[in-house]
Image (tube, rainbow, N blue to C red; front, top):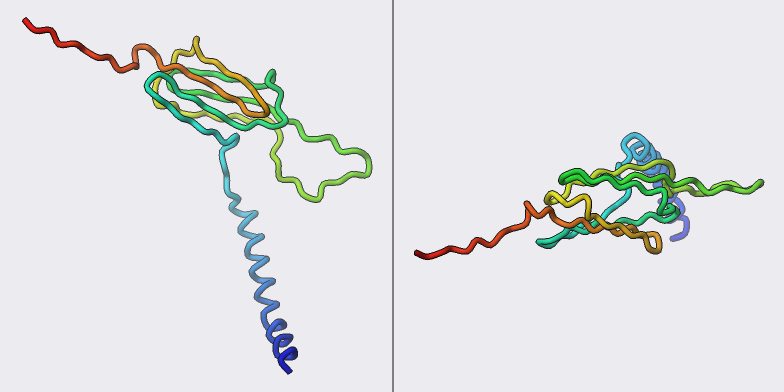
Length: 143
């Protein structure tokens, strides 16, 4: 008897589950969440700012970095994996294509002294603070 009641309850809930599924799918396709890519970490001290980002599947030669004043722009391309005959995706979530990300920095940097390195799929960019932007200690002279 308890099993019959549970089956009846399950049958009553089925249309609601379908409605929830359709609702999720419709809103997912109508208003997808846009996340800037690539994701970056940024930290600073008085002398420099450091930017890091993950770029798996990207060759270092294909990364372009431009610095102007307080802005850094990253450009790169990630190509899709080649599938062999008879293979097909069952899920495809990783992005591929051309990417560009512009980030506002906390201060102007010396663009001629920027250093970048690529290690294990992570790009590290060290941007030294422009001399004119560094805090100066002013000594007070007495007469």
